[in-house]
Image (cartoon, rainbow, N blue to C red; front, top):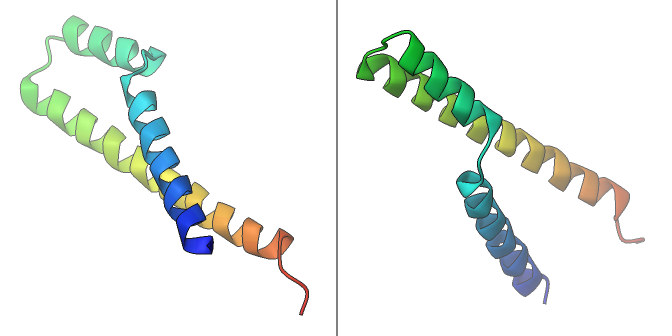
Length: 79
């Protein structure tokens, strides 16, 4: 029973994450203006894009670990 709830939550998180990636955002606009205005080369664009991706994924991982810890701490079943 608990595993099916976990799979539903993971599927929901995946779907919401994909929707979030498709949303327009100020960061994408700022990055495109910077790259266009500074006549940057594709290597700089790739480097910035990879850096943003890695940092974003790492922050999501940290939020996940903290969320699991909080859930286990706050919703601990009485023994």
